Image 1 (cartoon, rainbow, N blue to C red):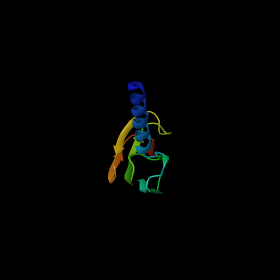
Image 2: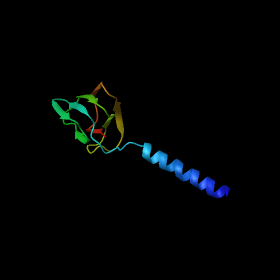
Image 3: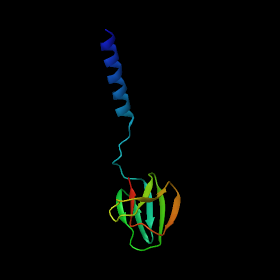
Image 4: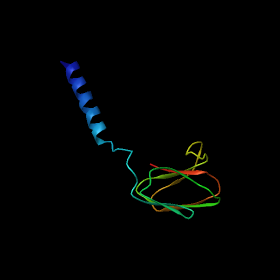
Length: 96
């Protein structure tokens, strides 16, 4: 009887955790500005063409400045809502 109760409790706990996790595939609300380009409700990877780069994150998600051109390699900076960075290195920005 204890085994059944323990399994039932574990399954209920997993169900609550899964239902409480928000979807991560939705686009961010707001704007991301990279130099002179404005991206509305951005989602995904955006290239940084010129350095130093002015990057302003006015979205509902965190933005990451990456060393690689495809939002790979190392993260150089993390920008929360309303933060700005003048990136001296980095080749892409990821918002997700």
